[in-house]
Image: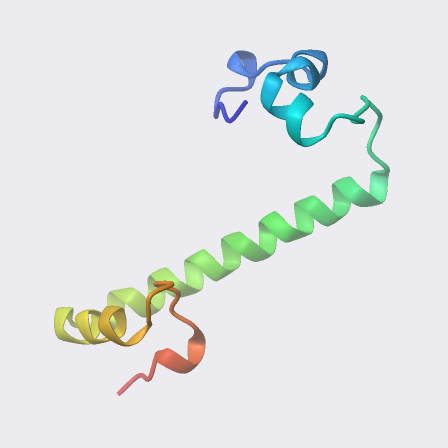
Length: 88
């Protein structure tokens, strides 16, 4: 199901027949998405891409020592949040 290549992805009907989907979402039905739902997904992807770009710029400014400190200080979830990043 998680194929990056569109032609390699299974169709909706194939996904709905998958045992994993049947077990976790037994009442699933194929239906069209509302246009606003599609717009929301596009906005989410754009925002996510912007965050990735911003983090890339920040990471390029950090030394290896600062990166190591961030990794050690960010906790078990390995999530680095903006308050963890202090530019000097």
